[in-house]
Image (cartoon, rainbow, N blue to C red; front, side):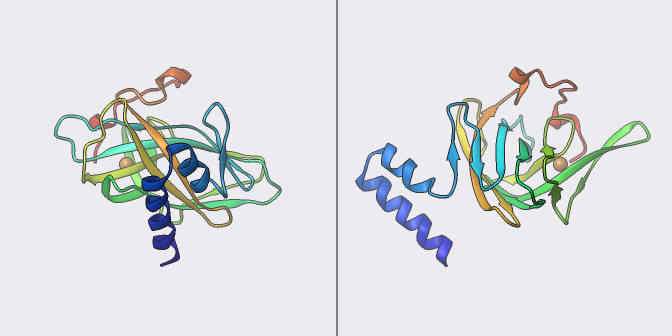
Length: 179
Ligand SMILES: [Cu+2]
């Protein structure tokens, strides 16, 4: 209920004020720097992007790197996106010669001083049964929920080659994987 009220407040402000004001209002508990790195509590989120919907594929994926600069561990519990019916956290592992995805039902612990990486070919945020189709160039919000840091919303850039500019090795097309 509290969350709903906040969303409503944000929507009202957006109607009555300029975008700048609205952005400031929604980032009370988190901040972003010029490089788009979003910080909340001890966690920093960088290199986040969403893969554009491909052909008739009902699913896509999103990626982020989360760095824990604090003295305590935290846990990524879940993720959410308006763009999909189901949003889950997936791991990727090799079983023989095939890569298989599995849901990380307990989320991911992010140890103090450590980083949790979601990237093409590895851990990913699975967006299943898309309710709308993210296209290259647009920005779609994905909310991560942490045990200690709470919810953090990331404005994810949609790309046909997410994170390619950072020189991520092992770039794989999610569309070729078993869904
Ligand atoms: Cu997956």
